[in-house]
Length: 314
Image (cartoon, rainbow, N blue to C red; front, side, top):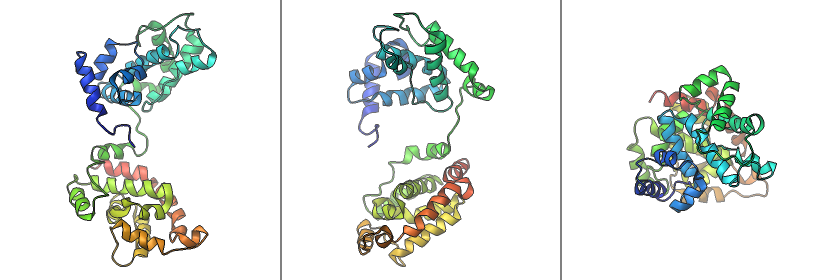
């Protein structure tokens, strides 16, 4: 289950507005010593990671990621060392300067800033930062930034980020992930799928396909409701330039006969007719899975890069 299930965003927005702020980042800047986990408890039914994700989204758009790294480091120190620097064992101090959950290259910058604070800056006993702008945190941050490669420094100073393979494609489909139901029958699925913006359907269908088959092979894919979109996945793979992968999916779909069944129960019934103690006996796709893994990893540079290239055309 996603951490964003339910109405967490609405609860966060209501809490922030109640305290006189229009945005989470504005509230955080006005309350620099409150750890995110404590703030999450105050709001209720919200996780700290949700708050961090919102803050990252805002600060990336406004080019304030460096400030956010320092801000969250200060909060983490207050969380782990409420009695001040030097008041706990080495492991607790390590926890106090360890923050993650940032996109690249800010993840590396955050880790290095924490290490520099602990090993090079070495705060005095009893120290607690007033905020992420505390001189000692700024000093550790600048020391860490100077230690990074020149190209990485330029990326950070420009407020940019390094996209990991597949992230550009995911950015195109994230807002539509819940717009298509694969559990309410073929009619609902096809109606919703046709309503997607051009190209988004190709990315969404192939994302489902590669995720399911990489996790549990073709057998898991066809056994689950996800395989309702197998025909769309074929079209999507071809659009992405993964023709061999598409051909392999077509080969696997032939197990179900000339007319592919979108109905999950029909597919399960066909799969249950297979029997045996060994996987190669009960899994009709046993010999296809490794070929699929290899193609998803390597054809056209691999699925993620192919998806990113296609996403760039939308």
